[in-house]
Every structure is written in structure tokens, then in C-alpha cells.
Length: 303
Image (tube, rainbow, N blue to C red):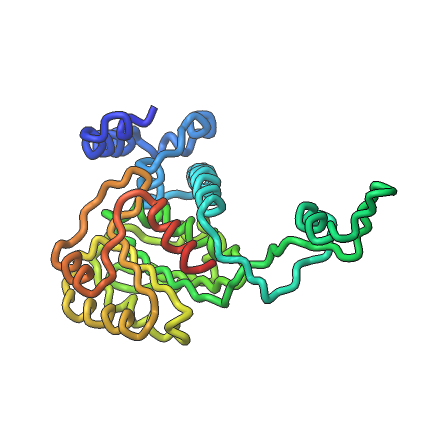
């Protein structure tokens, strides 16, 4: 069982213990042995170690590491896709005529509207018009820009939100862009549909300079009112005032700016209090906690 959920107070300590065990188990040697690698169970701690060490792996060990990452990504994708599908969707668009197919036939309304054609002698209802249900929903082309801090402290949120971005990239009329950064920024948009390939191109650790990511993100905001910017970080920045000013400018432009401090499977994490207070004053409070919160925010805006 997931002890961190059964006993939330031990969550952080449990994660530290798991990470320590993975680090001490001579992971490279285990991955080089197909029989041993097959016995590994993908977990966030294991995936973090694999992502950190992937550049030092080759041959059989690298192939086994990729297989483990793929298994974990597929498992999390299935869970998040279910949450996206269950989340509320947009209103019916009654300006679009309903499709005249049998599965959309509204039997109750058809009978009600044709009751004046009831023949009591023959006990027959003559139908001169069929009524169909509307299934088309109001949507407008939307642009989703996801900016992910790939420093080591954000690995849980990075994995979850990278997968979530790929799910939204598969929705109709949603144009998804993905940027990862530490002290340099990388545009991962060509791989946004495939979280596995995206994660293989990330490099965990290092410093944090969000201004380089903003330089890539701002030119992508062509129509602010049709754009949502999701910024995932703990916001411990060394040029914090400069970065916050640019984020405030994005918010004031009409784009929906969603700062994400920690959106994980467990709901744990910390956020720089300096940024937290300023985002609150800006009217764009930091989302933190369970990833379902971000799913709800994005689905409400994008559909």
C-alpha cells in the first residue's frame, strides 16, 4: 500500500528512504542484468534516479532504463487521462445543428412534440418531425504553454505535468507548447505529444533562471485571451523580481497565468513564500497539492 497516503506525516521521510535505497542498490549493475531489471517496480524515486543517470547508461542498461521509464509513464498517463475525461466539459453549442443519426435521436422529445398527431381510433402516433440531441460543445482554438522547472526538487511535478501536457495535446483545437528550463531553456514542443521522449530530453538538477524560459514563452503568446500559461516551479529564483514582473505582464495582457508550485501524486512540496504572496496579490494564486486541481483548472479553461 501507499504508506504516504495511509500515514501522511511520514510521507517526506518515506520518500527520502526510498530514494536512498534506490541509490545504494547499484542501479547501473542491476539494469545491466535483464533478469534483475525485470523485477524492478517503477516508482517516482526510481524514475528520478533513472532520469538523473541516463547519460551514464548504454547498451542493455540503457534499454532496460527506457523500458522502466516507459512503463511508469504509461501507468501515470492512464490515471491522468481518466481524470481529464471525468472532469467537467464545456457547454453545449446549440448554434451547431445536431447530427441526424439514430444514436442522437431524442425519443422522449420526439414523442412529446408529436402528441397532437395521436390517432385514438387507430391507437397510432404519426410522427412528422424527429428531434435530435445536441452533442457539439462550444470550443475555441486555445494555446496551452507549459513551462517546467527541471531542477531536481521539481521532478515529481515535472513528470506529472509533462504527461498531463501530452494528454491535452491530444485534445482537438488545443495547441500545446512545452518548455523546460534550469539556467538554460529548451523548447520541447516537437515532443509534447510524447511524454516519454520529452522526459528523455530533460536534464535534472542545476540552477534555476526562469527569465530564460520566459524569453522563449512570451513570443508564443500571439492571442493572449486564447492562451493559458502554466508555470511549474518552486519559484526559488535568483532574479526573482525581474521574473515576477514579466509574469505579471503576461497576466495583465489577458492571458490566463497559472503558477504551479507543486502538483504531485502525493500533494507535497514547497513554494518560495516571496512569490506565493505576490501571485496572491496579482489574483493568480499558486496551485499546489494534488494534480486533480490542475486538471480541473485546465479542463475548465480549454473546453
